[in-house]
Length: 266
Image (tube, rainbow, N blue to C red; front, side, top):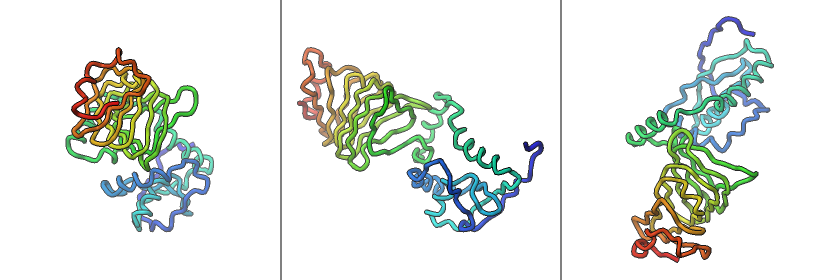
């Protein structure tokens, strides 16, 4: 047990002197490009924690990004006073501890709104995310997020039966790529839904989500069963609104009549 503060002298090391821990259990290769974006914008400010033999204790993800960016020197703090058990425990704790706290959604929303108003790239905050497709496994899957979740990278096709909801600010969904993304669950996220490409198929349970739906020129929105609030917005081009054959015309939302001139309907 450490009972008094130890010196935390920051040294500058050649990046090639640092060695990745061979048993790092945190899989982060998919996040390297996003971290590269952060380092380009903000620099490499947080020191790497390492032992004097060069083995990294913490900062594997940032170190991978720094190497990809051809950075040659990074700040380092040595942790030689820790026992091998303390090093193992710290590696696990530092990655796990990010899940310990909750967000104040109102305050976080204000921060994100101000950054957005300043035209700052929200991808650099970690609250925007682009993935291939959203698929569900298990009895009660859910996605909980804030910012913008962009689906369809790589023209993927996927079906998600769980719930998508806000966490730490309003979540918006953007569908890209030529594939088909299907939502069958009772989603409650409050941000906008934008179909920029491909096809998004939703059920009436989707409209527990309170934001509007925009279908751009070319892509398709499919709706299973009757359509209800909120009103879909088709534009600025001629996006197609397709109602699946299971639709009962007696229960169609009145706003559908006004869509005929803005986009195709079937």
